[in-house]
Length: 502
Image 1: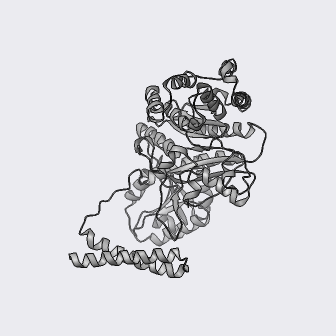
Image 2: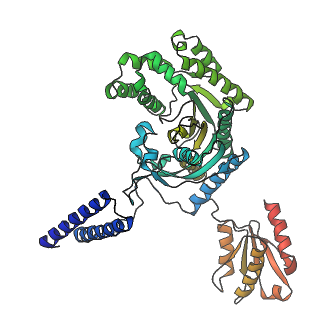
Image 3: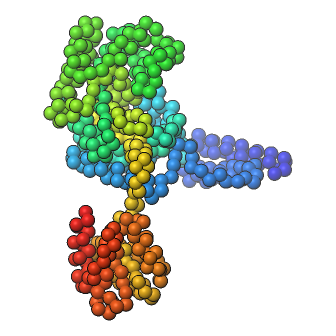
């Protein structure tokens, strides 16, 4: 573009931009504003096209994202199916919410992690952001709908502008599987069920040994107060403690002292507490700490923890949990019990695969009358779970079936494709999953090889002689055994054999 023409286009863009701003300030009708915004976008597009010059498109997925091939998707859907089955077993119903929210809805709910929210450009006067998790949109949903009680699950994608580590299942776009109980109930009964839900889900996925770490935000706050942390630094110090699962204490301490201005002696006092873990024995030890027990929140938190452990024992998950004072969960909205599940025998090193806790005040942040709806929930990190299972299958050399085809309709001679189609139509009418080759005269060997390579259990072979006798040949693919079956008995015979296979 010539310099003069470029200058003229830049001037037009500026003038059009000024006009749009004036119209918005004057609160002109939306139709007029939309018309002038469209003109502005066209001018900007011309400027961009002229300025860009020729370039080669690089084919890649955006950083922190990935494509999923049929094998990956078969594994993924199997994982989701098992998780949903657990959620339904516990009586949950499902909802969905928009993938983006008004930015104001998300702002101020995640503490230091707020910097990871993806912001979108102004769209028709609304400032939007991609959802960071499913919990805040759920709280907004409850407040908008005046819903005071629900047990829900929600499986959907969320977005975080994080530093990805795709080999460990950490992405910028990923699925979360949430289970939440909202409503005013007796202490620790819903909380204990959420922990049982985590245990049931991880057991069903056969991921190997795992441990569920528990803590309580009131106990953490009492520890901070006892150690001399100023109250206005509770949440930011909590975020530092939350890093202890993957960062050495010395680095966490350095962050507390040098970046967050905490006294070194105070930091050392915190370490004496957060380095401890156990069960009922730890509760008793903390109750003997006179300084800690001066904090009312410590008394309340320890009573709640004792009751929770009692209920976890009834729910037969006590052997899978540990009371860990280093567990903090950095999100600002947690108010009570917090928990996190960690695989203890995986080779991938993905860390936490589930986490959650109680957040009693979040709904009230959206309600004009500050009406609260107590909530407790858990989120399963399906991408991390997927990475573990993917690695296990790769180590075993196992192949995943990517289709559910039960019967393949093959032909042994030429020009029998219409007969195959008649048989296929009958199979589909009967609800049987079936397919054929799309070539009229595919070679029989190639058709049977397709069955073996794709794990299809049964094959129907059509031949001129069999058709003349009103029969087909039914082949068991794994054993290669073949038997003649009358055409009018075919559906019943297939159902019987599929039942035996399953």
